[in-house]
Image (cartoon, rainbow, N blue to C red; front, side, top):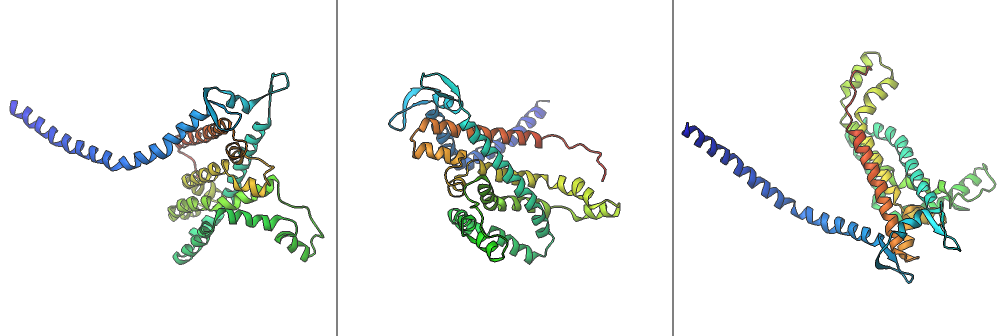
Length: 314
């Protein structure tokens, strides 16, 4: 009996020691990543939270005095008698940001899915060429790409000149400096981030499933809604996140295509740090934007973790 116990202890120790060694080596190997995340993400976020809860300095920057006035400023403002009044100005900017970001992601999804499906059905060489063309804009600076739309949408620009040459219009108002111009610029800037994840999901799709659906006399609409879209859901969700989240903090489109007068949260935060020098208020807006992003990601993670209901027929 004692011999059996000794053999069991030796065997367990021989198993646990390599596991402990592997665990220590894993920690050592991941230590550079942990350090990068700590110094480049955790510490900056901590600084933003700290500054957002400090008092704004009238001469710029902040004072090391605890205060939540910067968060209060998002919803309220003081009148001449120092009474708090509800202020919808910043709430409208937040609502505009969420609306334009959602509209951009939805439009990118509608355009990207047929494009990605078409690319996946081409030959290998054609796929490589088309994917190269999709990623080609990333080789050019974002500033140049967005500014190109200023030349297209402005008065006497490419669009107006082309329509006038074709005799379709004798003159038109400028299409710049409004929500539509910003929406066009954001769709153009971020649509490759939607195409690539959807293409990756469609590329992994087993063609035998669609063939089986066709053999079972399923319509194309049923095949799309019951087979293709559910199996491509991870790529669709990933593309939606990759487009929606950057659109929340976009700066160039409101600045160039919106003319600086149509504010979004990105350039509002930038103005607070650079022009108004109200660091506490800018930090509080950044925290609110971070909370919106985290809530969206948590909602998406919870929705994605739900079990798939079986029994749906083709």
